[in-house]
Length: 286
Image 1 (cartoon, rainbow, N blue to C red):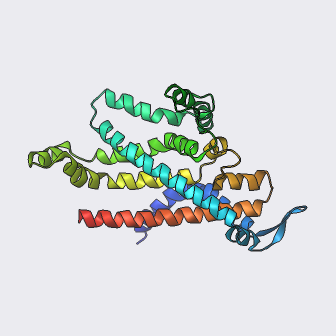
Image 2: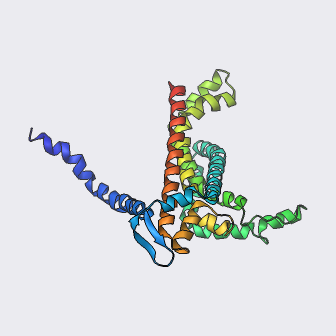
Image 3: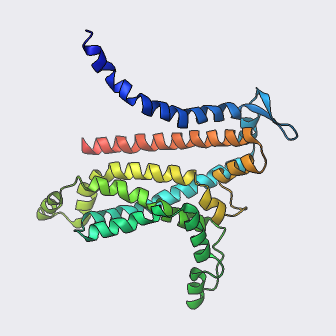
């Protein structure tokens, strides 16, 4: 009995430093934010002691915040959909490349991650601005200048550029487990290329699409730099509202309440999406 106890507790002892770090860096700030969201706030005195639901009642009772949450949701969903439509074929082509081109294009896909999001946002503001290259092309073809900066279109374009690697890598990883001979076998049995993609390739990459889409949606819904720089003061998203409440209005309880509501909505959407796709995947794969 005594000889088995160290072996039984060894995994917990080995993971204790990582768990302690996780609790210190993630759970503790989250708990403090939750406590802060229930505290009272006075415009002259700031955060006061005592627990109240005024911050949550203010958010849930104002249609202004519903509009912001709805805008954040559809921008995040559109970004996720575009990343899926672009990233999945890109990952498929990447998986079929041979060396050294596979390494070269993989580096090209991952290279934007080495550049700060703020720098990329400023770059897109130059490209989409009134005197940017996009408007210059529009003038050349006779369309005329269009107002693209500080619109939802600019935010979606920049988010797709930032989030695309987070979709390509999980799908590409799933494709590494797929034997190309399986596709050749299906083609030899007179299956069309569309049928092979739909019934052979797609079921195999579903886990990659699931994980990639969850990552892209979560990061897009909580993005701050791109909506703040390319959306401007008029196109508000949830992260920019939280930023304003914390640093401009100094209403920390309200900012904490909005942040927790965003977290809960994100978790609800991600868990529902995960359950739906995993159920369909298990049913399809038997």
